[in-house]
Image 1 (cartoon, rainbow, N blue to C red):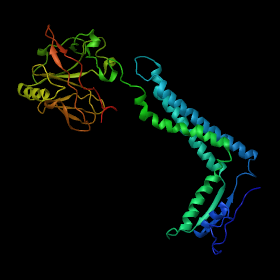
Image 2: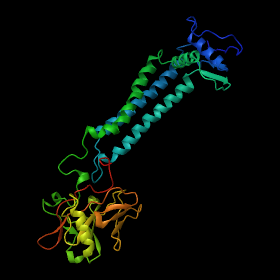
Image 3: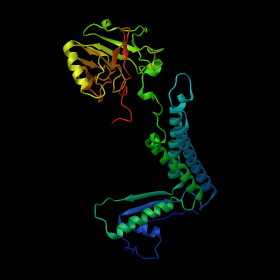
Length: 366
């Protein structure tokens, strides 16, 4: 039979809520009466407990929870074990981000539908009317509130529906792991392991040239001598290795600047005062990464009079004479300096790779 309850009249005598003979619903009703709440309708959606209709709804909701759990576990599996490193060509790594998005999306969507179906199809229908008031709560009312919360939990039906209980555990629990996975993922495997980690090396690393210093070249691959850059001028240079000017080494474009002698003296003093940039200049020449440390745009607008390097994307400005420290805009980290020298044939070469990471900030940095 359909369970229907009607509230008592607001003018009825108060009930002793500590009476052990009262049911939990009796206490709930008394609490509602004291708060001037009238239950107009409170009825189950099913004719009797454990009816065929109720079991069907429970199975459907449980299935949604299980789908959510399976999809979230798949997300964790892809996050931990699927190849994630970027490589040229069509590789499995191309599917890493889409797989994470699809599996986590299905997991959250199924969980949302399960909760909605539970609320719409499984919980009893209730219609209540309450007059608001601002009186402080008494001890009895706090007891009533606690009993009401327990009663609502009972009405959810988890205790008498073991299938639903198991489905929640298997379906919702993996979401907690999914939330924690990105936070601890870097602790599972070092993404920058190896002798030459991808994020820490560019095309100027000697390993790309048989262990020998890499020349600075134009886009067509021709090497550069000091006299090729006029005083106060600048030139975009690339590593003189195969494909050095292509996207294969997109982190390597560098701005080679021939400073005026007085500006060069200031720049050298600032560089030599910094342990990482000490000795990185050659004569009046200095070279900085062209990749903005804010969002990776090309910071290539050189203001000769102010010795500032501007990024056109978000207007970050870097002071060349002070280790390319940011002086304006959203960038918070300086441009890495490329150590320069000249080989026996008089061409510019990189004395070593950049000593700071190139490009925008990533998770290792504050």
